[in-house]
Image 1 (cartoon, helix red, strand yellow):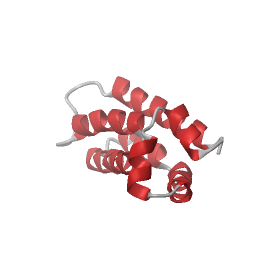
Image 2 (cartoon, one colour):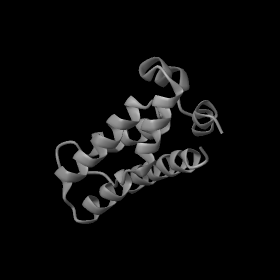
Image 3 (cartoon, one colour):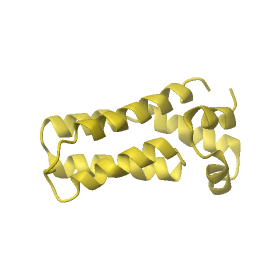
Image 4 (tube, helix red, strand yellow):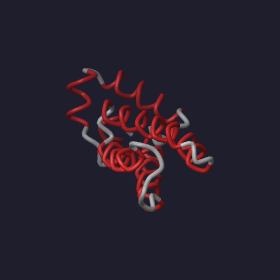
Length: 115
C-alpha cells in the first residue's frame, strides 16, 4: 500500500500533508512514528485517574499531531474532546466523545499498519 492509498483508507487529507511535508517518504516516516506513539493510551489513563489537566494536554497533543499529519478524522474527534476538557473536569458526559476519538484513532492505526 502506498502512503497515498493509506491516507485514502483513513479518510485523511493526503494533498494537505504532502504540501506540508513535500515527499511521500517524509509523510510515511512521520505517520509511522505516529502509529508507534501511545497517544490514546495516555488519554485513557489520565481520564481514568481523573487527572483533567493531564488528560487535556494528552488530547491536545493528539489533536496537534493529527492536524500536522492531516489525519482529518483523528483531528476532528480529538478537537471536540479537547474542548470538552478545556478548563478541567468536564460538565458533560465525555464517554461518547472518547469513543469517537478511539474509533478514529484505531482506524488510522489499522490503515497505517498496512504500509
